[in-house]
Image 1 (cartoon, rainbow over the protein chains, first blue to last red):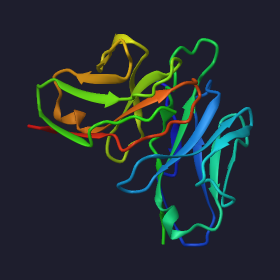
Image 2 (cartoon, rainbow over the protein chains, first blue to last red):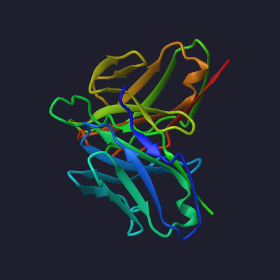
Image 3 (cartoon, rainbow over the protein chains, first blue to last red):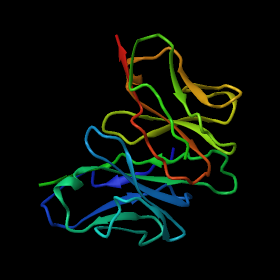
Image 4 (spheres, each protein chain N blue to C red):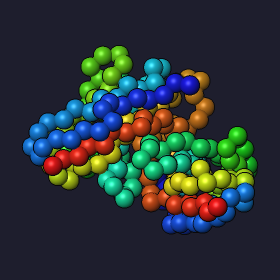
Length: 118
Length: 110
């Protein structure tokens, strides 16, 4: 069964450093998302991406964040100048939503990257 | 996006049937009802989706009354591995972002 993969599984960084979180969505999917979950809290939407551009972003997704789909397979989240409060699990998700897609909102989530900012 | 309300937590025992009810009073005509499951330290996973009446798959059943203002996720004969957080959400468009609530933390006891 196809799945979304994310690397690394755990990233430790110093405050102020830049990190890039990588995701490989399912190959025929068209919509891509990043979510984050601070320990003990709910999953929060960050950004959605379609047709090589951001389609929607949340208030959390400020100028510190950027996303990119540099090639046909990878989808990355860059966090510039990390802060302590950026420590969280970051989940990538993808969605087919093509002509034969019958299910609404069936996003496939990756296993997550645990980001720890020291 | 329609607001959903579900219990914060539930306990049950292995082998029991578990029903988690979600209310969505302001659901719109075009909204679908979707349930996700999240195990600790894992990403959420789609369980089931429905529009009206009853939907069943290999994991769960979803019951939706005629007025669609609520829905009930039914897990038959739960096991310890069903301990997870279960999220109810409604979505109008296929590619809508998911707005997760706090979900229902289901704890299965031996």
